[in-house]
Structures are given as structure tokens and as C-alpha cells.
Amino acid sequence: MPGPKDLDPSSSPRALLGAELRHAREKKGLSQAELGEPLFVSGSFIGQLEAGTRRLHLEYAVQIDEILGTNGFFARNCTALAKSKYPDHFAEAAEAEAIATGIRQYAQLLIPGLLQTKAYAEAVFRAYRPTAPDSEIDELVTTRLERAHLLDDPTTPLLWAILDEAALRRAVGGKAVMAEALRHVADLARRHRIIAQVLPFDAGAHAAMEGSLKLMEFDDAPPLSFVDAPDMGKLLDDPATVARHTLMFSLLQAAALSPQDSLALLESVAQDYGHGDEHHP
Picture (tube, rainbow, N blue to C red):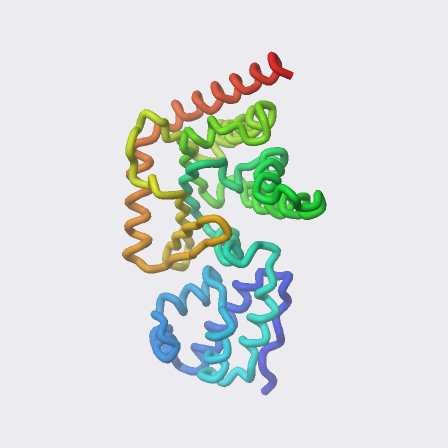
């Protein structure tokens, strides 16, 4: 009997590969835990691979082909599907984000990527790469704005963003850019597409002073946490770590302004930037 055909990388690659993994595992009569044991991973990790919330890396794919007798299918396809338009440290998180049903994010210093305007994203990337050619910056901005199409769906994912007041006060790209950027966030909140809160300076010490935080939830897989630093990022699935980060986000929600007061502050600061730009061309 011929084996499965190689997958088309253009069509939900991780979900397709995960479905094939589940089919091959069940055909072999193995539970998720039994497949995970020789790989030294948990059954829940195998479940995340099958659900498409985690990327299948080559080292695991080779062993899975040996265990399931799939004649190199998973090694071939995970290599082909590993190509990403995102940096290596963020690629897996971006892929998980695309199928998440809920995203909760605390942004410490800048407006989150999913909520950025074109001009704001250009200013951010230009600051990161001051000598890069315009074509490189344009490509980065285009990729970032494509991610924001997640919000084209009227209800999914549920995005709950907490912005530190520092993200509002740092004039990325200048006053006009900031006015547009904050109005964009406020518009999404006013249209009930996102829930937005602002963590004010006068909240004092808080639970996430050491950095930003992103939590992702899925219909058929355990939640994930993503933490990042300059040119670094890590997707975490350890239940204790995810639970601790979930508590951190809950504490931030309690310390932040209410959604209504946050919306008022976003619009007020945007108005201040707009007036400042008018008075100081």
C-alpha cells in the first residue's frame, strides 16, 4: 500500500502534518504517551504536535519515522515545512498564534505587533536595523501587517492586550505616527474586537517588571507561553511555567486601568500627540 503523499507547504502545514502524525500513530496502535516515551517527551507534547500547536523538528521527525515505519515521510515534510518568513526565534510562536483561539499579551515597551500600524512598524524596524536597505524594512513590515489579518475574523482569536503606559508615552516614529497608532488600538477596542487595558505608571511595582509576556490558548491543546528578548524567543509548554505566567497576567489585569478607563486614556494620549504634531510641524 503506498504511503501518504508529501504535504503542500502552502496549506496549513503544521495542522496537516499533525493530522498525518495522529493517523500514523493510531495505525501503529500507540498512545501519545507511548510514542513520546522513546523521544523523551511527554504525551501532551505529542498531542501538541498532532494539534498543530507545536512545530515538528527534524530530530523528532527522524525518530518518529523509525518508530512508526513511515519511510521518511515526517523527516521530508518537516524539513520542507520548516521554511518560514519569520525569524527562527519567533517562527514557532507565530505559527501557534495563527491557530490560537485566545491570546493574552502584556507589552512593556511598545505596541504589540498584531496591533501596529504600518508607520509604527516601519519606525520600529528602522530603529532595530538602522543601516538596512528599504526593501528589507518593507518586507519586514509587510510580514508583520499580514499577521494582523488574524483580527479580520470578528471574534477569533480573543485578544486581550495590556499595554504598559511606557508604550503610550514613547513617541515611536514621532507624534503623528503615535497619534495614528494609538487611535488604531482604541478603534479596535471601541469596536469590541479586542480588550485593551493600560497599566499606568502609578500602579508601581507589578508582576511582570522583568519583561513582556504572551499566552496562547487552543481548542484542542494545552496553552502555551512565549517570552522573548532581542533576537531571542522561547515557546514554553511546561504546565507549571504556563500556570505561573497565567497568574502574572491575572495580576496585571487587576493592577491595570479598567477597559473603559484605558480606552479613555488611549484616546486622550492620541489626541495630545495629534495636537502636538499640529503645533510643532
